[in-house]
Length: 315
Image (cartoon, rainbow, N blue to C red; front, side, top):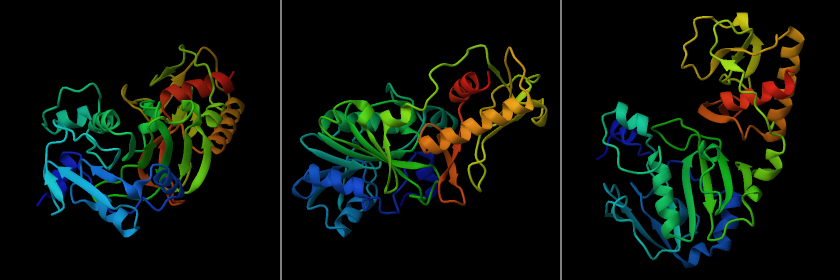
């Protein structure tokens, strides 16, 4: 039996909540004729996803594989080395393991082009199957990968696994995808957020490279991650942030520019950022571990987007 520690160390998280009740998934399932196909589950573990589909009467036949089967219905196969072929539909929760985490845990890293194992698994599925539904990190949208065949992304705002609180989404792909990547549809659970193209219109389009982060003398401060209560990211006077910030800090920082940040400028910047969050439903902020009390995942403002917000709204 695989222990929880072993699962975490190798990025194997067994899905405990049923994600297939969502309207967007059911619509995708009808269009790809899910019930009439043999579903491939290449990283099945305990075969929970197939069992969940069966509970909803959404799957007839399936083939499940895993390098360490944890269910009688799962066949032993190293699908990273020998991915199954001749299946039209693939549904899975692949292993999540970043290259940095693997190095830290002393796990050998395969020769792949991506920085996370789930991206390589998704590449294998898309190369071999017409229609794919993957449960993957909610940071996937920020990667910009595989948008040619991506139809929808559903952000799942609840804990899907017992071993981790990492934010989760379900990405749905078809053979031809949308007519163009900008038409990818986004959802918070069952709530439609609009298309990627519609939300991207609210993004500032320029970032001044002169803006410096992690500058101990900066007169603008940023507390760039939500607390556990609600959306709390905010800009502050630089003096409210400790000057001994680490050069590698990614969330709390002091910022300098070739102009001064007054209290009025900071208030205006926060007001504009608050409007941006509401209009874009936080889609462009990085999902962060842990649910807030309002039922949504915490978010982090990365420095690239912060630079663009400052350039546009703090002049």
